[in-house]
Image 1 (spheres, rainbow, N blue to C red):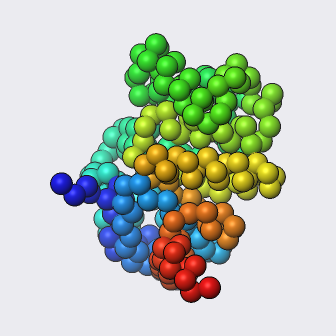
Image 2 (cartoon, rainbow, N blue to C red):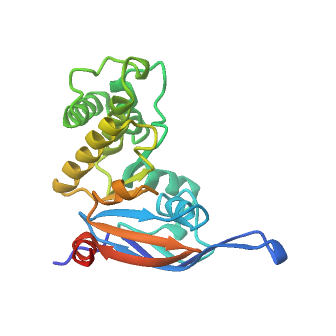
Length: 236
């Protein structure tokens, strides 16, 4: 049986304002991302990539068109249902890590499991397993201030995978990291993808996009290019 794509975006538009001040942030974007894909979404400032990320993350809704996440039409959901979808189906990773400062790595990773209503023993097991998967099994009691930037981002990755989401959505995840930590975090994304996880990275950095299997480039709210890396390599 053929699996449905994790993401189906069909002729999505997003406009802000009205009349003479209207801004067409997205202008008829269509995109499908299969389960287990590893995708970079690129574009300059004003290209629409941040708007597309907000829609993919169920942080905003299209003006027109459809967005299906793991088979669910998000426009049909109310605010409470959208929040549940964000928590259960999307693992968010941000440039600024978004960790709670005076809380341990373990408690940070447990947080989405608390929101999901997972019982204490099970969420502890899953959080420890996630931290071990990102190489931080020995740092579970450390607070963010006791961790390097790369380690903090690893905690954020552990938090993202703890709920076993349909998609990992990373917004400029290496923007605050040095070159060595960047390589380590990208290696981690590649390993998660090899394990079958769907990973979508929003980035403006060609070196980051080069680590993925597919690059989608936006310009002026439209998809300019959507190619597999092997196609890119063949064209060089």
